Image 1 (cartoon, rainbow, N blue to C red):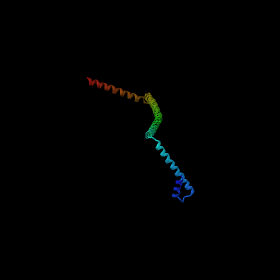
Image 2: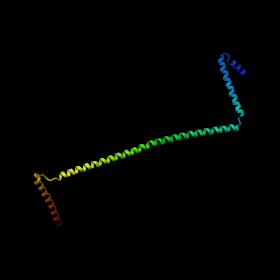
Image 3: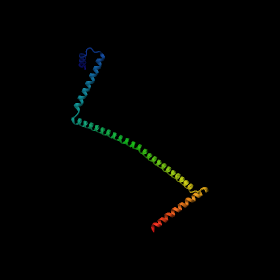
Image 4: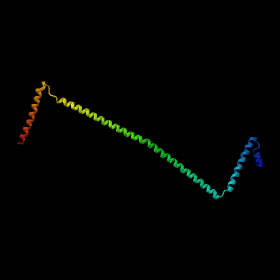
Amino acid sequence: MNTEKMKLDELYPERDAASRRDLEVLANSISQFRAAVHHIASQGEPAQVAWQLEQARQRRRSVRRRLVLEWAMAAVTAIVLCAAAVVPTVNSHREHVAQLQAQRQAQILKQREADSALLDQVTSELSEAVPDSMQPLAEMGADHVSYQSTAGETEKNNGRN
């Protein structure tokens, strides 16, 4: 340690005492690290080091697999949640369409009933008896119709003979 201190003094003679202490602490830490690395290197057998490296590789692979599996599960969960949100929407849309169709059928039925009621009213008004003042014209029209029908039958009979 004294020799190191002398080397530092020789390298940095103009530094103050605080800088020297900081440099001494740094030099001491580096020398301890170097000693620890040399100690581990001298104790470790190559087979044991290889085994430890293989264990580290397996842990790294398992972490990668787990990470991929976690992302896959997250994606599946997101898809399931989206599908669960869409299914009620589709069902409610179908119910809404069915309600609209039922309303449309009810409106068509009401319209048909109103149309048939109007048609019945028009028919009843047309089939009313002719007023007294118009009676001679009605008889004349009836005679004309009966004359045409008898004339048509006579022509048919003449055509057959």
